[in-house]
Amino acid sequence: MREDGPKKNKKQNQNDSDIDLVVEFEENTPDLYGKKQKLKAEIKSEFNAPVDICREKYIKPAFKNQILSEAKYA
Image (cartoon, rainbow, N blue to C red; front, top):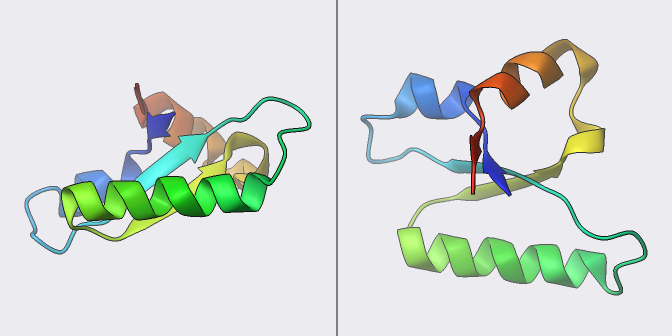
């Protein structure tokens, strides 16, 4: 799981910042949608902030290098 940088950097000192996560799951993970929704809800609840979740393979090529270079790995 990684927190991506572009939105975070622009709004890092604002209370209305969102959390952007790049996540990966094992191939053929059952109920992937449900797992992503549960993760999103848990993080939103813990940090009281909106959460966006994206898988690396779906990041637009124009933004991919920047996002991944600024990501914080967890």
